[in-house]
Image (cartoon, rainbow, N blue to C red; front, side, top):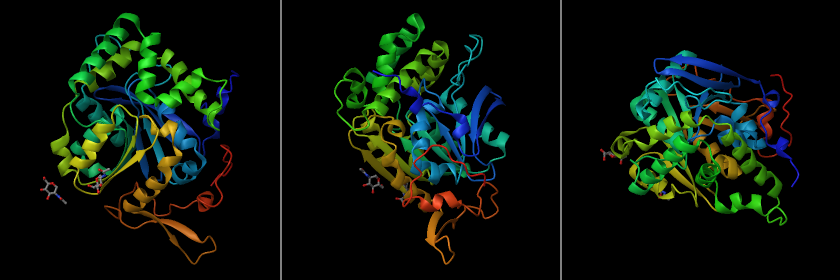
Length: 364
Ligand SMILES: *[C@@H]1O[C@H](CO)[C@@H](O)[C@H](O)[C@H]1NC(C)=O
Ligand SMILES: *[C@@H]1O[C@H](CO)[C@@H](O)[C@H](O)[C@H]1NC(C)=O
C-alpha cells in the first residue's frame, strides 16, 4: 500500500488566515491553544477526545471543503488540546497534581479570558464533549451553543470504568503499546472504517485510500503520545460524574452527533433524552465515534441549521451576492465576539460551488 498520507496531513500554510499556537498559562498549568482564523470573528472552541490532539480529531471536518467555507471563513476556531496532548509535548512532571474534569473545564474558562472571548460555540468529541458540556453547565453565560460528537454525560458504567482501568494499566506498564493503540482506534472508528486498513487489496469504497490514511495517521499520532500525559486525561475522565441533572437546566442550544456504531451510542441517546430544550440528535449510520473524521460531510447540513438556530443565518438579499449570512439574535448585541458581517465571498458558493482544493488563496 502506497503512502499517500500527505493527502490528509494538516498543512498549516493552507488554512485560510493561517493559524498560530499559543501556550496559555492557567492557574492549573499550561494549555496549548491553536488559533485558526480571524480573531474578530465569532469563536468556536474545540476539545478533542482522549489521546488525540486537535488535528487528529477535527481536521477531517475543517478540511472538508464545504465545512471550510462554512466554518473557517465565518468563525475563529480555538482548538484547545488537553494538557500535554499538543504535538511535541513533553511528559508532565509527576509532581504536578492530577487535574479533575472540573479543573479541565475551568481551564477552558481561563482560555476564554486570555483571548478576551465572552461567548463561544463549543465543539467537542467524546471526552472533550464531556469537558465542554461541563464547562457549559458551570459557565452558562459563556456558551452560545454546544456541538457534541458521540458525547459522554454520565459517570462511567462499570464496564467502561473497568475497561479504562485496563487501558490505564497498559499505559502505565507498557506505554503506548500496540494493543493499546488498537483499543483506542476502536474507540474512535467504526469496524468497517478501521478494518479497511487491513484489506487494502479490496477497494470496498470509493474513498478507500483516504479512509485508511486517516486511521494510519491516527495510529502514527498515537505512537508519538506521551503515555503519562494520556494517563492524566483518561484518569480524569474515568472519575467523571453524572451531569444529567445539570443538563436539564442547560439553556443553550445543543446539537449531538453520534456514530451508529460508537461505543457511546446509548450515552448520546440518554443525553438527548435528558435535555429538554433546544436540542437535536443526529445519528450517523455506519460510523464510529469520531464522526468529524469518519463522516464529516454528514455533519454539514445539521451544523448549518444549528448555526441558524443560534442566530447565524443566511437570507436572500437584494445585493448582487444573492445571499448573506447574518447574526440576528446575539445574546447581547454588544458582544464583541459576534461579528455582524459573517459573509465572506467564498462562502457564497457554499452549496453551489464547493471549493475543491484545500488551498484557499483569498486574502480578505
Ligand atoms: C426542563 O426540565 C426542568 C426540570 O425538569 C423543568 O423545570 C422545565 O420546565 C423543563 N423545560 C421544558 C421546556 O420542558
Ligand atoms: C432528541 O431530543 C429532541 C428534543 O428533546 C427530540 O425532539 C428528538 O426526538 C430526540 N431524538 C432522539 C433520536 O431521541
